[in-house]
Image 1 (tube, each protein chain N blue to C red):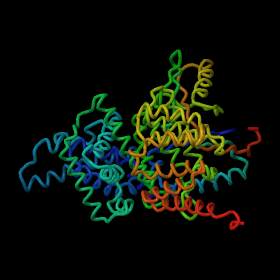
Image 2: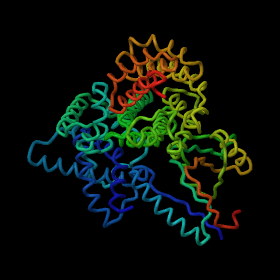
Image 3: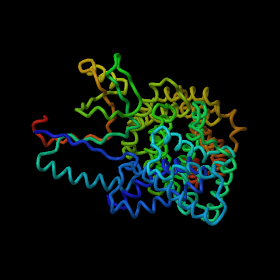
Length: 126
Length: 418
């Protein structure tokens, strides 16, 4: 079974870490990643950019509506995610509109990725 | 992360929102600050035993509010009751969660708190000091160290600034759309002032101010998510700050953009800056911060200096000149013009600015650089000498000194050099 671990925390607090604190957390995480990697458990891992860089495509309306900011509703749940390689937000939104046509309702939050660890340890993912 | 470090970060993060709300209740900066301080002390005692609250800011607001009201009551027993409007909301003290703390209030609370710090009567240095003290919660000692002044002098500067804003009577009602956008613009300018104070200092004691300015801008953007100029401001600062470690060499000397080791640029900040400017431009409401961020983005996108799209940079500066005419903008544009059309053209562009920029270091630095490219060594030497006299930091002076030394070396007869 593949599992996704979704990381939640208070962004304002994390953004208030000093650089030294941030570095220390990233170093400890690096060690934890190494352990999981050695056990061939680690798939792709991602650190997202802050929610301030996000846009949301509401696809419960036609045509879908682009809203600045992250997904904020609480009555819908996170059901999955895609990683897309696009040159700009416009391109990413176009791709998301394509997906929305196939699967209307709800919303897609489009959030740029800050750091991508491919985590090649899981054979199945290749 | 240790619990103590987490608590510190949580208190810092909650501060603008909590002090902003307390200011709305008590309408007095000192009372709001003291109430917040009191709440923080209680948090340090309470959170380790009871666990951190779900919403630290809301917790701090409630506890701070109750503490300040208790304090006012104790005072009241000893003296005549204060005016009702000095302690608003006294009636609903008893209800533990009297007011639903909703996002719309927070937005304007934080904006008001920031706006109070950039009152037009305050000189820039006081605005920055006040914002760092009140919004960021830095101690007077920390701020004094950032500015390299004595603690007593800084204390006085902040006290004076506080007295001025208290007299200024900033309205506490929820602002209308026009007023809100005016406040946002003033606050953006102030945040950029904080940033520049740190940026100019390079690796000096004011350097942490860049991080603080970015933190404040991100905070503002979380509250005002659809403002393209706030996206632009945040992007601009991130893209400039990304070059921090590359801007100075090991000896602390300035390294020019063309000579910087681009592998030292902070990729995380660059991606965030690029994502933000990308998002801002979709609004098609250009403003000075967005244009400057777009210029910084073109530099950030170039893997090597000669891959820089100077023609596009020139076009963006032309837009900025139209939007915000200033000799400084023209001066910056001249660098792009020199790359696209040549040094002679750039020199012709900046020469008429001399009367207005005669006290400006960068003017003579650029003039010297252009003259040097045109092989007018004697005039370049004069310009560089003028620049040194106007240098703002030791690094700036040292950088120009290098240019002069190089000129002196080149001036030696060829036979001697060999």
